[in-house]
Image 1 (spheres, rainbow, N blue to C red):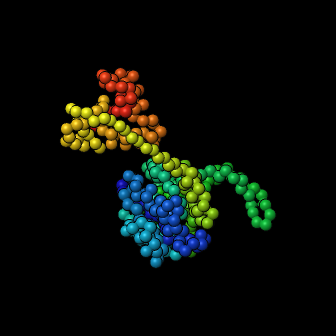
Image 2 (cartoon, helix red, strand yellow):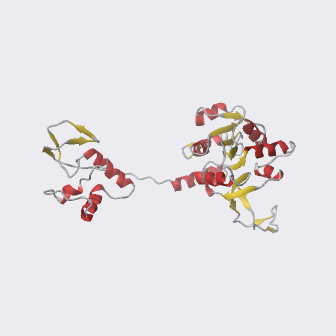
Image 3 (tube, rainbow, N blue to C red):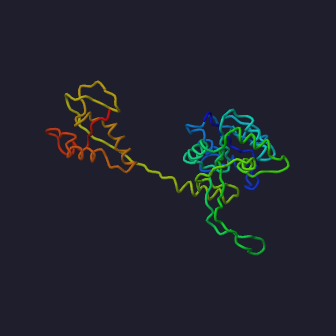
Length: 308
């Protein structure tokens, strides 16, 4: 297929959240909600351009959230906002995504683009696990959930198909998503595995749940590294990968670069992989690195050949 564009629909007012700004511009996990999905789409190697659809008067909020990016003003309904976005892009296929689903992965994008190779549309969906029943003041009959799915975004389409679907859709009837418009045109929309992280954020409690999910996925590790070598005549002095002219150098099995060795130890510590001394001893015992004559095991353990 040819060029691929992405539309992020972010034109709503977010009134159900009740905050001072529309929810798509509200802070979530350290940055505006809109910034999460924009980063996921713009960083995907198969997506050539990203267009944001915003509401009238939201230009300043968009600039504060993303800086100067391509945007178009939407309409009073989601359907009209998407139509305005479709009119502003030039691509053979398009992904249409709701800003209220911020945690989008490249895995979902990959699956959608793969489905477009054989279908005119595709969407991610999750199976329904809860019991479904008719409601009201009292519990009614249960509804069979076999074959039911929870539809998510982004939804991917061949651009000509989704444009035709919008043109054919009655203007006095609204659509909750674009896939039903394509189905009404008589075309098939494929289903790919969805992602629980793509839950839609609608109510204030959804923000707290999203923050908790994001925090649970974060892992922070810190580590320190240090190295010691003695000065010796006849050795070269290397620090941070730079040879420094001097009448003495640091003595060691390798270049004895204490700066690089300390950084290496810190990096190994961050990933939980021990230290360079441990790796050096393993290499020495296996015969990959011959021991230096006259050096102590401690000296050998504190040095490692430069990887360069």
